[in-house]
Length: 448
Image 1 (spheres, rainbow, N blue to C red):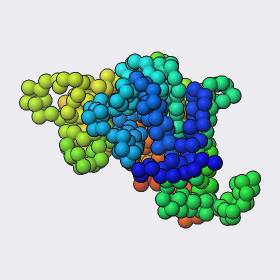
Image 2: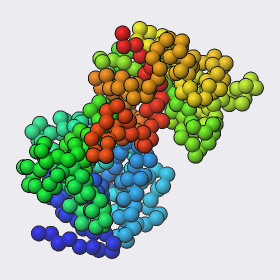
Image 3: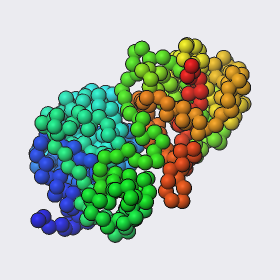
Image 4: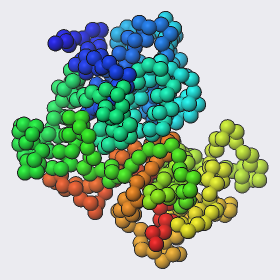
């Protein structure tokens, strides 16, 4: 048995020992929370880079913020505590680290098309591969001549369970890790994780073949949480409003029909960086499913004063500093109508002045309350619109909309004091401005 020890602040864990034993080219690593997946794979890649000159390693995740807060942060921490970090070898702009022997690691996101379909590499590591599409993975994989690592929390089944199944893909090898494989965890974190087991079962000490029997389940939600995040097992986490509907994709079908744009205004006026951001999404319909493209998420003014003065000029590099310009230049479907929807942009009605300003400048924008009134529709009840969205067979979110995917993924039904799910009430404590914009846009869809 491998001895678990600490060297210079870095702990060699059971997770690392198990990961080092993997031999096949494609190494699939599902695992629960705090299982040490990322902090186990990174030192293995680092050792390989140091011992094999001129090795090129790509570490990829859904977005740059996700990379910075996850894999990159862990890599830099590991390099520092082991005394290997040389500041001059780290390029903060390009997010690359070059070793003395010419090997290097590059960190980039799946929404950087030039890198996904760019140069080849020796080793690939896709962190949280459930947040990217299979097509993106495949483009990265065919440009990799050596080992491929992918990891994820198994909240639901997705493309990896089909495309990289060991029964289908002979080059794939799977390893499930849990928090018990990570001796670096503090006792307090371990206790917090294991509290879920007590919330889930009447008798949490029953053996594995009996513990999940219906008569022993105290809370379906916590039983699913424990299986997914405690044991690293595949599940559709109970309580997730859209868990069974979500999927990332890299394109909208050519035959899809445009529905509408949806827009949620920032909650604190114009150009307030501390406020919830403006959010604009484009909605399409095809084959019974909803396709969502994120157009914009951020804080900026509603209009540019130069526009009002008549001296407005298009800003360079496809960057626009106001909502008017984003709608005008980046929303080409704005004035279209079709059989399934009214087109245009369905906006938040909380700030009618914003909508009136945009309409006065010729944009086809309408507050959702005005749309409901003009079309004699039922009053807007948020939970009912959520249920309407669930009527779509699937909800596909285009790459580049990973933050939107996260909001949909994290939205939960409310629960009562016993942990039972209440399917007529939403828990709105998670971030949801992107969801709101999609809800407004979906009102334009005709179910007739």
